[in-house]
Image (cartoon, rainbow, N blue to C red; front, side, top):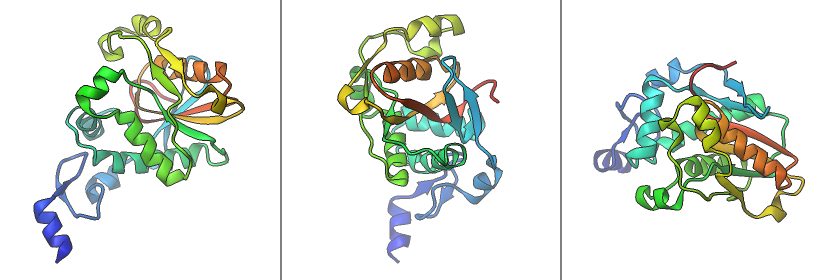
Length: 214
């Protein structure tokens, strides 16, 4: 009875197709059955690997955009679960010291109320039992990457981030999280900075990969 009442007053919708789903579900059966069985992966310009459970298209794109711009935080539950599967498949033997997120400008966080990459990081932190730490800050105000062409994206991330808690980074293995990997320049710059600041190894996971992938 309690679940029935909760479903009436707080209905859940599938992040990928927006169908009504049960209170205990994170996505509908039909969408789940259509997901790829193996993770996608790409090598970043800096050489690190990025893995993802999804390609950035159709229902997955809608779920990520709703998470980013429409305050549908519930979507992070399902997306985070599949990111965890991708990490376990591709980095199964790796022991991580910290999980961290690609940072956003404080102004954007104030306007939106949250950083979607941080929400996904915290889902992974709970599932993996690895501590989440803020290890990077976005220190400059520049155009968003999606508004630029490929060459300008590369220049746009130079000097964009700053390290935090460098004492914690020494000798660490970090899992870096973001929502989308397109050119890989943002993730690559974050990896470079984390390593320069003391991390021994940085591996990446995103909710989706856009464009060509391995």
